Length: 118
Image (tube, rainbow, N blue to C red; front, side, top):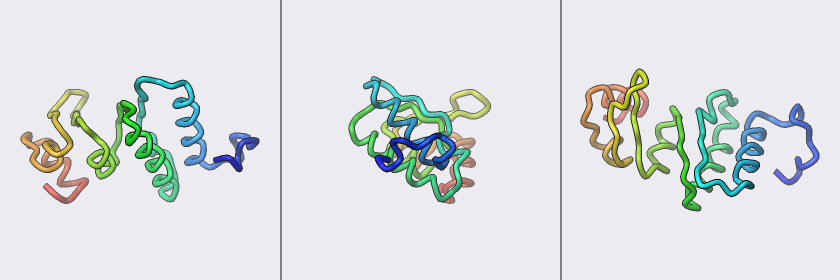
């Protein structure tokens, strides 16, 4: 992002703006970062850049609470997963438990639809 240090927001893509927002948040040395669908409004070609930035943060050990429909990403970086349905916790456990061996029918249905795996 260094080449864009003097750029105005209107000169940045959605993905670039998201990465700048993440960098700003991290610069404050938070204990926890909250993300609410950080890729939902992005052009599909910009999603990977934002996910790569978040993946790098996850590898530093920073605690992140993430609301996402990016199931493969959630599976890959999560220590703990909470699957919610209609605002209620339907199932929770490790990423392996939820993605590889879900117990609740609602979780199985959702994952089958989004991962084509269960």
